[in-house]
Length: 122
Figure 1: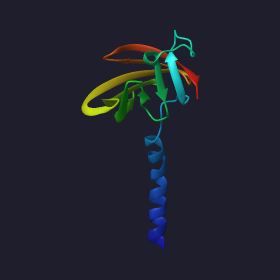
Figure 2 (figure 1 turned 60 degrees about the vertical axis):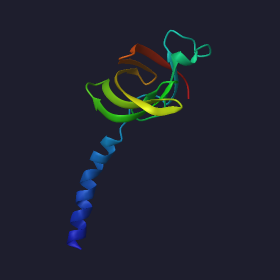
Figure 3 (figure 1 turned 120 degrees about the horizontal axis):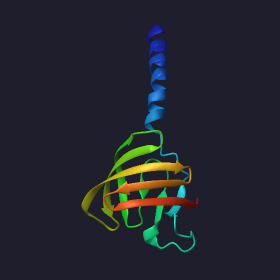
Figure 4 (figure 1 turned 45 degrees about the horizontal axis):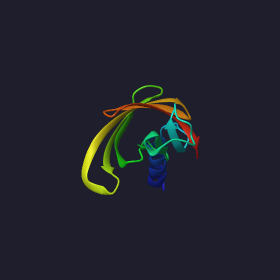
């Protein structure tokens, strides 16, 4: 009985670690568009999708998280393995540097450029 109580205490002490590992970018889930583009008129190149976690999906590719590191109060470095939609034969790696401006706006920089996006709908 004492041994069972000890294990319960050990598992309870690990709970905060598991919670921290499942954290996410503090962004509203939904569609985002380039901050200079109206929501209704944004073409696919100006759109992205955030469904939770750390990966902000672009319209042309599907990306999977390799590693995410919070580097400041609102700054993150997110390493991804990406595949062009419809073709998983040529994966490529991307490192996104994400700054969360608010729960509905972010700035992202990677080897393709710098983008600022705002939330449009859920």
